[in-house]
Length: 71
Image (tube, rainbow, N blue to C red):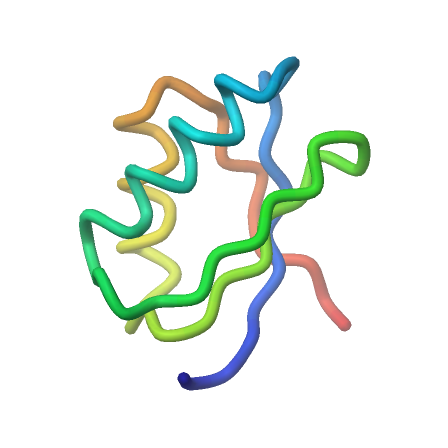
């Protein structure tokens, strides 16, 4: 599955947003693991190669990428 990374995302307000972000990320890598925390404004991703790919997918879905969360 790969390394789990967390990202901050602004603009998600509903379950439709969760689905849009999830779809956008899975479009880049169908075997990836994506978990969106709507309340916390974060997205956990494993199996997508680079932060740039994650950023592009989130922004293409219409949301604001705020960067990786240091864990």
